[in-house]
Amino acid sequence: MEENQQLLQPLMYPPSATVTTTTTTPRGHHDIKADESILSIFFRLVLVTFIGIVSIWANHEASKGFAITIVNEAGADTFPAKRFSLFYLSNDEATRIVIKASKSVENFLYPIDMYNKKKVNQVTLKLADRNLSDGVVVEFGKEGEFVLHLSPSIMEDQNFKHAMLLEVKKCVARIWLWDGQGNAPHNLINGIVEYIASNFSASSPIKAKLLSSTTAYWKHNDIRVVTEFLNYCECSRPGFIRRLNQAMKDGWHERKLDNALGMPVQNLCTTYNSSKHKFSSTLDY
Ligand SMILES: *[C@@H]1O[C@H](CO)[C@@H](O)[C@H](O)[C@H]1NC(C)=O
Ligand SMILES: *[C@@H]1O[C@H](CO)[C@@H](O)[C@H](O)[C@H]1NC(C)=O
Ligand SMILES: *[C@@H]1O[C@H](CO)[C@@H](O)[C@H](O)[C@H]1NC(C)=O
Image (cartoon, rainbow, N blue to C red; front, side):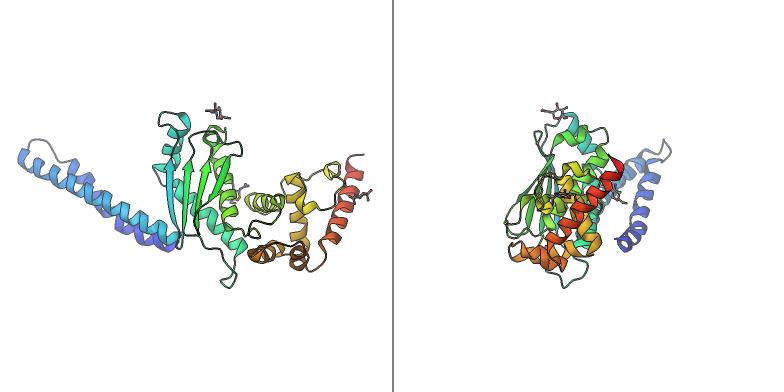
């Protein structure tokens, strides 16, 4: 990516400099001016085409093989559609965000090539035509094709740039994650997605009171518990989530957790619970 940019910049500056000089020709020389304006239009067309081709090529290069399409489906005069166009569509920012998010997720889940990497060929990011209750929905299409539906409400968020980054990162994490061929517990998958999107750490420490009587914290109903527990596991057995992801390629069984941890997950549930109780007994009570 960086190499590409260094390569592109010298290519792109000279033509735009030419356009600027031709448009500032002094008045009076009508014939020359007419010729020059035709030339100038011609140059602009060439330039626009050129930049278009270069940017498609650069995006393709940067995303290392998957195509990205951005679609605005929200009504054209609505505020979310306008904001989306202005901040994400017109300047290709949406594409860049998808590429950046994908890079960071791929580095985490598949740091070396020999890992069984998922096949991703085509990602379409759509601003949906109506609010979605979950903020985003990832649609799994034909093999290797994914559609990310973004809720227009994200564009109305006070901190929409942050919200957008977070949601795109979640979607991209969901795309790259194996899910035991659809059989892994949803709470676990959502927890891993949340853990990745929140930059590989638990958000704010949860209180022991939130832990219900169940000890299967990796599929707890409260996503904060799952995320924090995953963080706890990852800290005590680094690479755990990566190994679990690999194992989930072929299906799901609870033993996959034990294998990825190198110890029974139940042991960690027990130590996690007692650490929370110890922690809260000094803080809360
Ligand atoms: C969508 O959600 C936003 C923010 O929550 C709200 O302001 C807007 O009115 C909603 N739009 C529709 C069509 O319900
Ligand atoms: C994650 O880290 C990146 C880069 O440090 C930052 O831009 C982004 O806002 C962070 N995301 C969250 C959810 O904290
Ligand atoms: C969690 O730990 C507390 C204190 O050690 C204990 O009373 C409680 O039964 C444990 N909960 C579970 C679900 O194991």
